[in-house]
Length: 322
Image (cartoon, rainbow, N blue to C red; front, side):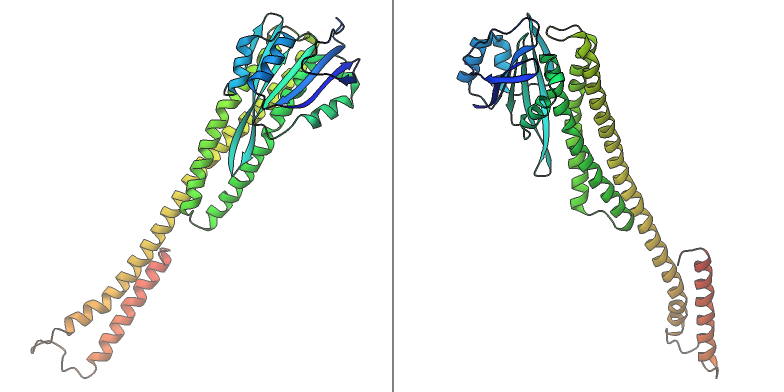
């Protein structure tokens, strides 16, 4: 396990570093608490935290598995929160998990596979003691908000790629690689939606349900987290529709261009059919054929062919087939 940070806070200020085996007797007014952040812990190390802070065994099992959907569980006077993180890796959305144990005077975050550490978040909160002084529920909100804010750059990056693909569709046929990319992106967005729905449910519970360690005055903050998740959900839904539209638009354009080419080929075939038919008739070499002995027959036939072809060309041009 990497213990990223473990500190005791009092009245919004960092007091000292604590060990994971140390149980601190904090004040009852919630102005004093321990905030511990760990990453990729072993079972033995989580068991140590369990013993020190009386964490529920089922919550420890969930934190060890690191394959849970976002949820909120209540264990006596403590709550256990699971949130899913997301980041882009090799042009795909990769997921991690952050498990959060919240008690009256402690908050422990356990990260698995997360690309964003909480050190920046901790620094920002420590710079505003008026937030830290309220206790662990405000830190829980800050962690969830930090995780949800990480979703937005992912969706914005996909949005830029889709818009660029949409522009290329207007000028050229989509290639096999681009069509494959469209379906890959749709699949990634569907998977992402499976994370967003329970994440919004988690935020909604903090807004509407009375939970241990969560003060009523903190509920509007969790409402803000819910709104952020809803915004990302809306963007994901819109992107899925845009991807479908890009594919359908590309198919329609391809059909239209194929139709244009077909009409052009049909027009030139009709024009070339005139001299072909006339030349075919007079090329049969029968002994008795009319006009074979006509002095100006050859020039007359050329004029007829030219006039017929010009007439057909003009008609097809007016019909916008050429």
